[in-house]
Length: 520
Ligand code: BG6
Image (cartoon, rainbow, N blue to C red; front, side, top):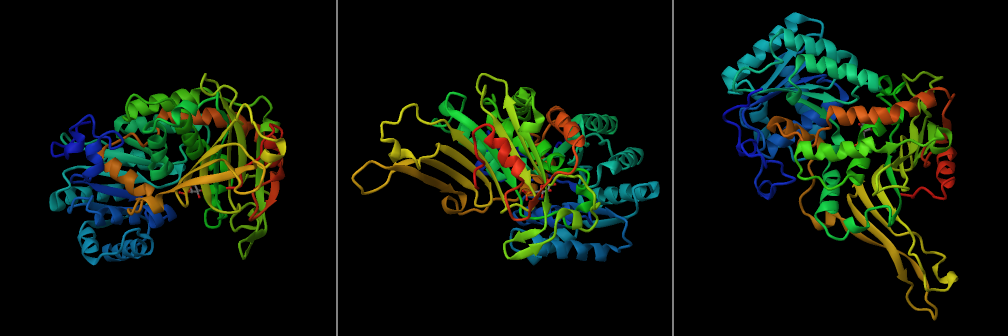
């Protein structure tokens, strides 16, 4: 697929990746002439994340003034009504301030195409709209198609795009397709999806979104590990006792029942976000931060992941029951609107994984996630072994825990190092845990862009390092499939009260290995 001859400087250099190129840290990367078409434009993701992210990019001056934004939807809307819909959602959810002049510039490029996915004539109208954007706005044949739609609709939309000639780019321009997770619901379906996508689109033009990779703090994991001398020498089985990766949410599934029921916590976020975090935490230093070098290291780790022999002992499932979230009384999962009242879908999942490499032999990685937990927090905690010898009275160190480096992905993004320190005063030497804290908010004045801002911009720039490859996706399913198969033979997941930290099963799972979950 040929790229535009007018592409900006980052596409001219093999070193355009900003993780690598210090010039890019200073100079903004600005998209060239192009447009984006969103399928599923009235959905939750589009309203709360995609449309605001596009506006924020425009407001930051990172989109070309001629940028085009086309919504494709069933509603019987006029152009003006769609524009009003975009404006309302942008105003409600944008990260940067709402600026009328940015908005009016963006609004000039907004179009709406009414139709359903089965309707070939709607795609002909889309094709005409896109051609008009090229003619009237100068988008030069460069168009991205965002599939913010359920996987069951990928096929029909892809085929329609191919039939109306939008899937392949004319000489000197690009077409890209953005696929939202879930990429299938197991290895088999992921492969089928892939086959379909490959039939229609050039593999180079497919961008699979895992929005965790767009988070600044996830990228900071690479800076922390590879820009510093002090972490890497201890980042291995000689020093690390175990690793806990936690993604806890306080929200339930209200409003997303149709998607979530039958999918569950593990398919929803372990298969993608948490296994990506594991890969970035455990991988070797990549030769560069190019997509090829990054994926080479991540796939090595994912290929080396070993499942526990005893899945009953080393995995745990739960389902939230009614309880309290702060001062608010909340209903249980089975009472949520749209959820099958006998559903066995898990809203909490914890698993132990091992990585069979020299660096990680014998170091368990514990992954856990859940809805309606105590609070919203995502973190990676690397817990170290105890010092081989403690030259203190045993009573002096009874409150001393293990050293830890905790990377807080969200909220309150930062890094905490926990270590032992002498308690001041007293006649004897008493040692207790203290923390040293780095907080993004306190150290930098700039606020972090939303993950979707970064990822949409990367698609428009054709910059692939932050997008998981097919191989990574397939390896992740290979890890999860046996666990899902095992869970499907069990009955109801263990209930846990909303607002707590999950089911007893998960506590026992760690206790068996002599560990405890961190209280984040
Ligand atoms: C999505 C999941 O991928 O991530 C949701 O489908 C989850 O269930 C969301 O709520 C959490 O994202 P974030 O960025 O708020 O941690």
